[in-house]
Length: 179
Image (cartoon, rainbow, N blue to C red; front, side, top):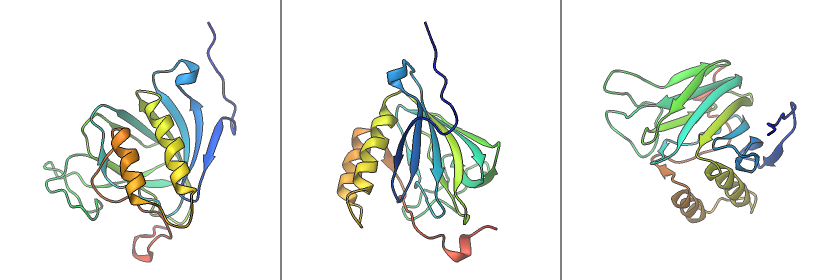
């Protein structure tokens, strides 16, 4: 029996204008957890969403992300940045070394509100669900100037992603820029 060692900068890489994902450990390696290194560009907001069966773990390697992992008092469809939990929790600004665990059913989101790319380690259980999701969403992002919302919704339905607020990417609005 052998494990695997993936040197820095190695792994299968998927790149679009909205994301850069490097596959580190996958179902093909015999893992039940998929591990990715993700570069989150300035202005990328994954949007609040839930998974009925998946668990996720995020670890900030470089930079700062805004993170959310709680059920809010009130869900709003346009944005998650002002949500508050019944216990008073709010969106966290998380720098290098910070992490977020998301159990099934928990609303969660992340956003890069800075003007610099952020690197994070992302783990998802069970594999290969998120591996396939990343492959297919990269195809959708690569098709042209605009993203087909119907194609994205069908993809999310297939891979246990219940979107609450929209996925957004583009320049960081000036009022939310940090640094």
